[in-house]
Image (cartoon, rainbow, N blue to C red):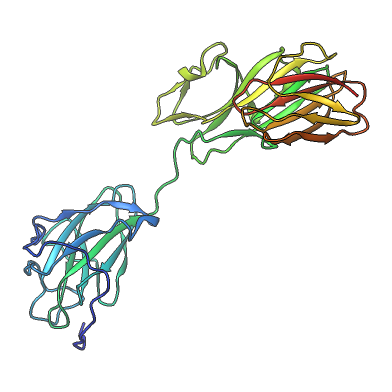
Length: 354
């Protein structure tokens, strides 16, 4: 490809590389390059310099008119990728060209481009080695410093435990057994491509049951504390049996991950208002207003108010730093059970009368 000689101003970026014959001056000794995530280029560019390089290859297939082509060489493995992106970051170099070829010094390049191009798309075969040549046609400019960066779209995660919540976004729940349905839905936020299941355990992480579709009829459980985990795995899953620890699950595949958190579920018998616990936070009625005092541990809390037969009549969030005043609905009359749930802390239960 013929080009008109032009004097180009050096780019502002100058990558400091010692002015000596580069170690990758020869095709026989290319410098390895890694493939980065798409967003990591050009930030993670590898510094290069062909200022002291010799001409060690054939005439470039896309820039054959010239007397000298000082070049440096690189190599990379495509790994799992079928497409790799190359970006050149000019430094003091004022003319450049790029060639990509199979892993042989005798091979013909299948990607070739010259100034002013600085971004190239390389079709690749997964698991294959390639060589990259960076050169300068000294008839049109000067060799010098630059950066070179390879990137590719990274595949999605295989196993990803991520987090689990209810379909309402809760990570702590309290239900009262009253013989009526309490159907709960739990959701995994896994971004992996492997299967994900939701598993009910006791508060010691011993498996109670798998939850198909993330559904749980909580009113059928015995009173006590439970946890809901997400499990993401590859291959066959082993150890998913009642009474075994969820921490002992294994698979014969590439990975297995539990969710980073679990939903806490407290099941109580609420046919009355017995079983008041001692806690740190004051709860009292001021006329028709429910008052929640400040928390000395500086934790906000979910407030759940249950009537004398265990029906939920109010639920809201209160902050930690000051007294919260809650106007209860008209149906919240008589003896009431107030439960405060804070992340990572035991529940606080109070009895009040309105």
